[in-house]
Amino acid sequence: MSKICQITKKGVMSGNNVSHAKNRTRRKFEPNLHNHRLWSEVQKKWITLKLSNKGLRIIDKYGLDAAIEKYNIN
Image (cartoon, rainbow, N blue to C red; front, top):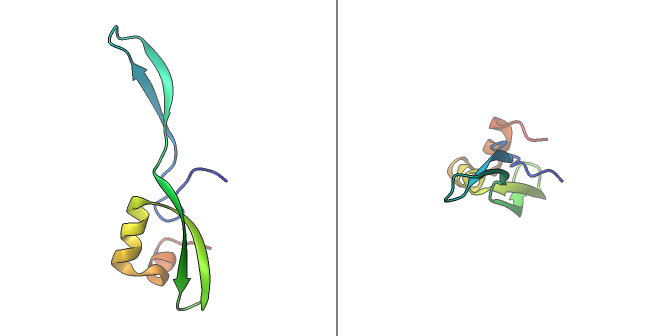
């Protein structure tokens, strides 16, 4: 699976490692993703999502079903 949050759509970013001598080499910044199994009251089933910490906070704020509807999750 790709490294993208299913709520916030955060993904991998690229940048540089910069040494003390200012040598630059390419690197990746990966989002802090976790697989979570959450209960949906509307669908009456468990839903597994790959979420970033920000995505978890959005679900805590709005609730799972409202967040799924607002952010157009399958």
